[in-house]
Length: 437
Ligand code: PMP
Image 1 (cartoon, protein in one colour):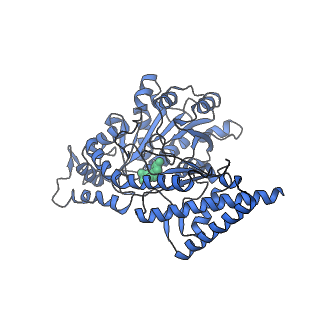
Image 2 (cartoon, protein in one colour):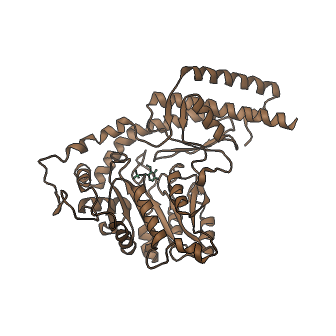
Image 3 (cartoon, protein in one colour):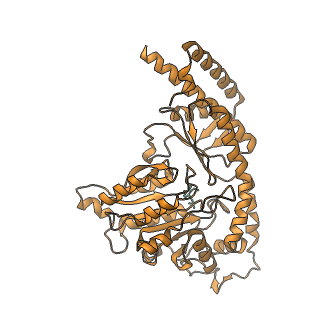
């Protein structure tokens, strides 16, 4: 990247650094405490769902289509919640399980099951290393991506393999090459709609290629985390192709396991979470989970379906969320464009949904920018978090999470962020010149 600082004379550069340091001192003296670390809905967004709490009280009939939600039973989830989960993930309701409140936990349990038991009569992934001279199974990880995904596979001893993300989804040439030639490649993490953090929605062609590509591993799995399935900021967002339909037609239906939750629809951590897969894979998941679960919180499932009975209700509800989120994302865009657009220092994504903006500064600056922001009172997701093992080889990517702060706080936080990027980039240029002298 050729930056504005690279084009300045030494004297100009020194003067600019001095000015930026003065500005940083002024910010520091304000004692700000602003938080842009994680993608959390703002308090106003959470308030939209408060009437959900009034849908079930002591006088409520606790039956859902004949199922008594006040007692044990119905491990797979109550019928109306399964129907809704099926609509959200694009499968018939009998291909879903609606469980507790965390999709991440279901993801962990599912992959743990692949690891310990295997699916569809294939050997457990754990056994792969023993029969292949200690070579661990591998999972493809589009980057920048979601740190908690990478943590799950890393924790089990699976090797995370970074794959570049493009505007259409993962670099499919590379995905196809690795999947077809290496039988240790057992799957791929995907956040296919409004991806975390790039905001990319996979193109129809990418979805088709994923569902139909040749895989050396017969038990290759697409871990389809559709966490942002209905999280559009604008009414004309690009739809996501139905991977189950494509895989079904291609005979690869056992390849896809989809996850979702209402964490960013109703209450983060207190929503309902679900998984969808072929009947065969779903039976394996159920068998593993039933060892430790008699039935999930059906009362919460009931509250959710009474509050949001249909997909149309969910879409209307999400439009209310978007009214809070849209101005925040538009503020990020305008502040970054005004502050850094002409600097040659940065590129960033322009998401049309989801919860994040993915920012790339000059190489070897992200850690210092995040540290400087922290020093100035603005907390960001740690640099490197968007890469497996927390190691961004270019040290360039930063995830911006604009949803939680108020617009005023966000505006202050973005001013600090822009200042930090400029100062670190200018200092880096000065250091490079000093070194080459
Ligand atoms: N997947 C993705 C892609 C996420 O961004 C998040 C965080 N909201 C989760 C899963 C976690 O969801 P849950 O609260 O359902 O565990």
